[in-house]
Image (cartoon, rainbow, N blue to C red; front, side, top):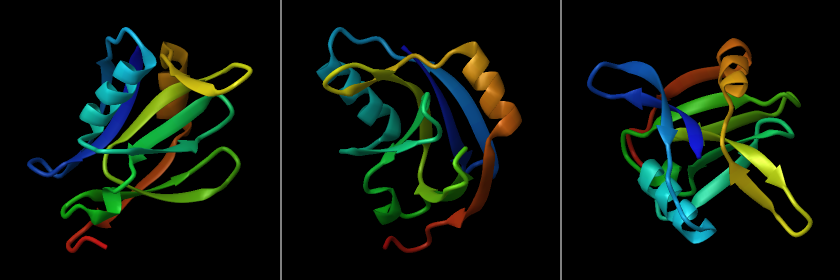
Length: 126
C-alpha cells in the first residue's frame, strides 16, 4: 500500500512530503505499520473528502515539538492536526471502511489543492 505523508522537519525547518510503501499481510499488520510510521500508539481518522482520509497520531497534541497544521477539507471543515499526517484512500465495503493505496492522481490532486498551513510547534504538550 502506498501512503502520502506530510510532516515538519525540525532540523531544516521545512515542511516535507514523502510517499511510503507499506507492506503488510493482514489488517492488523497494516494498522501496526501505520502506527509505526506515525510514531503513535493509536490513530485518528479525518476524512479529507469521500475518497481520501488523513491519519494522525491520536495523542499528537500531547507531544512536545509536534507541528500543528491547519487543514481545510473539501467540505470546508477546518481541522487542527498535530504531528505527521498520512493520506490514504478510503476503501468502502459493507461492514467497514478500510485503508487503501493512495494513487499518483491523488498525490497530484493533493499537491495542487490541499489547503494546509503550519500553525506552529507544540512547546508544551496539552
